[in-house]
Image 1: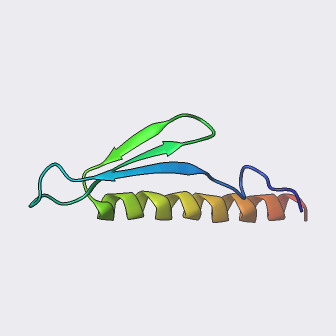
Image 2: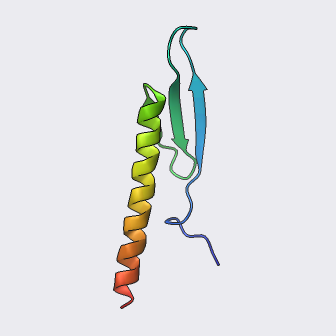
Length: 68
């Protein structure tokens, strides 16, 4: 089965801390589009990724309804 853009996402993830006592920060780069997005903490990163997957599920549902 071929992979479509709705079925595949590729990101480059960078993680770092400003200091030993600071929390982790993140930068996510979409490999397909080059778009970069920064996150102040890991919770924000996870929330973004969950939203990306929710959009994917909604797109699949819409595509399935078109075929009916």
